[in-house]
Figure (cartoon, one colour):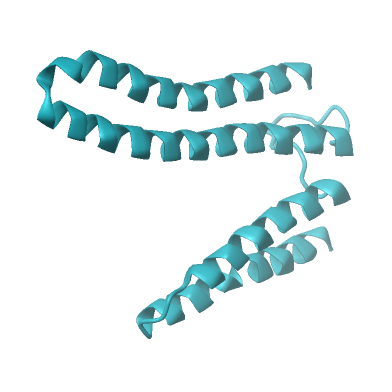
Length: 140
């Protein structure tokens, strides 16, 4: 029963991708459908974690010590969110700082070191998100 519920929820969550594809083919802006897709996938993650549907993935031959608790599911969701959102933020920061750095270097070659530092600081955001997720994982 749980597999059928998860399958239906996943189909509902990813159905806005088809709408976005059809809007793109017709020459319309698919941003609204993509925003709906992001919200529905996030709602699916919260729903399955809150219901306790998501569990541990075991290798072949391993035995589960106990069923996954809801708190462990929230911990896994927190790990995914800390890494994912930090990487998205780092990508946005690198996109703006790298383009500005390239423009500054094209005008003056002496600012290469300073520009590289700003780009590296923006990339550090993703590393901090990964470290937070590792710390959460160690607490589970």
